Length: 120
Image (cartoon, rainbow, N blue to C red):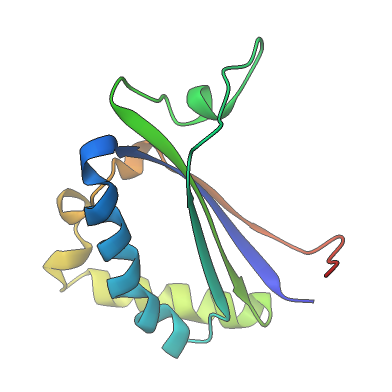
């Protein structure tokens, strides 16, 4: 089974297309480093919870929407190697600076996951 990276990202509503373009711009970079799939979903039915929810996870502000995204990799080793390459590139690439991102990366929630079940 593939290795999974999952992300919750707060994106300003007016930056929806900018965010989409950002993901499409960077997808070939990750694909060329071994990523198999990228899925990004714009929050459409994301209710507030009583104890916890997606809103609180990213400290969602007025005028923002939660994006749920994930990438799959053939294995963790490929993912780790790709992230090391990304870290090296980010040192010299102004497009990878935090202020160049169409979201507040300080409030992004992310992590890597070993598959437990994969159907379909």
